[in-house]
Amino acid sequence: MNASKRTAKSGTRGVTLRTAGLSLRLDVRGAVVGLLLIAVALVMSVVLIGTGDFPIAPADVVRTLLGNGTVAQDFIVNELRLPRVLVGLLVGAALGMGGAIFQSISRNPLGSPDVIGLGQGAAAGALTAIVLVKGDSNAVATGAVLGGVLTGLAVYALAWRQGVHGYRLVLVGIGTSATFTAVNGYLLTQARHEDAARAVMWLTGSLNGRDWDQVWPLLAVCAVLMPVVLGQAPNLRMLEMGDDSAYALGVRVERTRMVLMGAAVLLVASATAAAGPVAFVALVAPQLARRLTRSPGPNLLPAAWMGAALLVTADWAAQRAFGADQLPVGVLTGMLGGAYLLWLLVTERRAGRI
Figure 1 (tube, helix red, strand yellow):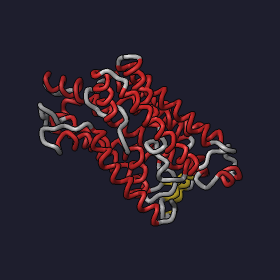
Figure 2: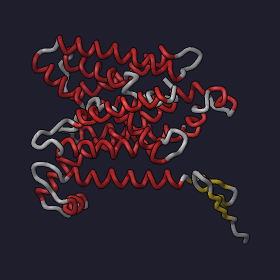
Figure 3: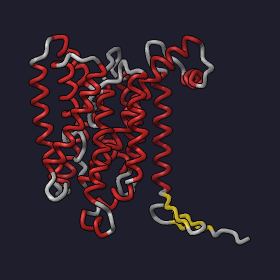
Figure 4: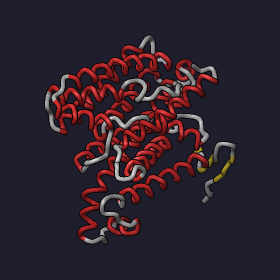
């Protein structure tokens, strides 16, 4: 019996493995960065679970997660804190991947859901449920998803002119975001005191009080949509070269763009429904992931892992960094993300891209 031939060829970006007629390109640096980001996310998750009025050592957290904790530890870890951390991981991953898709499609680091209005559109849907419908948490989540989806459809329709192109998408999105900001302000002025207080709390973006009711729907959305997105990753990378080049390589450009944008809109809207509009994670995570991997292309998985690591780390910092005052995680990500956005604008201007 002839043995299969196996070869490995090293390159500047990774290693190509060939065996029995098959070829696999492995980006070594990207894989290492991905594993490190997963490790950071898991370690910070354990630390975050152990943080609170009843602190638990990391070793005891792991022991409890494996089913060997005390009754009190089991209740605190598995019923109170684990759902919050899982929501944080899923929200961060969904925002990171959604942001990577939009930045890749627009070929612009400013092409983020935060900038093009998806967060504001989802907020408008949630505020409508709170202020006008007086709905419960399920109605608010549904309103946020519908608001995000309708905003995505509106931005796509307004930006389409024989295709959707980068700067037009960003400019239309900025205008849409400004419009929904005004709508949200109007809705707040029409709210009763208790409804306005509830709406403001939701608008900050927070993981406080999250339980299994938020985990399962968001997990289902991610389980369905993320494989779809990863299956389209080669086409997305070709789209970054421009529509004409993608057409020449056999990519059905508009169909691919619609599928990817639809998946990104649903990921971002579902994440917003679960935790409120957590600012700037979708903007920052893909950029940091790309800088760490130094790899071309959308870096979808590293962006998702970076988003998860960023959000659980930010939630831990929001609980610990300000003494007795615990900030909603959206406040902290907003402050840090706003500073990053200013730096990005200055960098893009110096490079002559804006």
